[in-house]
Image: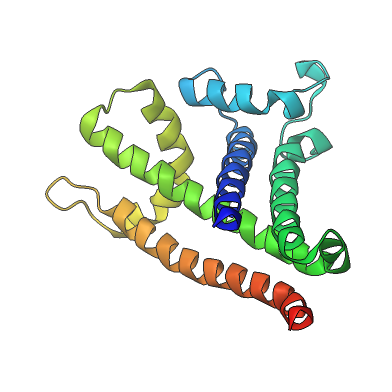
Length: 203
């Protein structure tokens, strides 16, 4: 019971930390301003690690000539998932197990990061849909719309509005959900495979 509660807390904390780092990376990649409500939140939540030390005029944009600081948020998100996977294994097999299974820990971290991206995309699409009905002029609407637009654009090209209702978010969410199921099962199978030696020793 206690172990399940600890695992749930670890999962929530790892998701929230990874999500804000991924958002910072993606917003910078999209060349979005951090002056909106969402941008201010993401900046405040990640500046402790990702604040630029160089003057803005000397920072290379995230395109040709990328600098390491542009990729730091994404690396931080992967680092959080690495720590999450290592802690899950350490809870079951001791502190030496994550070290001995470093390749599997890395694989779990990559799958975990992918799940964060998929869950974050679903959350952004749902927020955009709700705001479009409740408060389409909200300051957050512009930021969320800019983040989801690259993913919704291909669907909007082939799915016409039905009675003025945009069905592209529904199509995107359906596909993301299918991918989520596959990734989630792969993560669970990877964790079970990593813990298999522990089960064998216990027997």
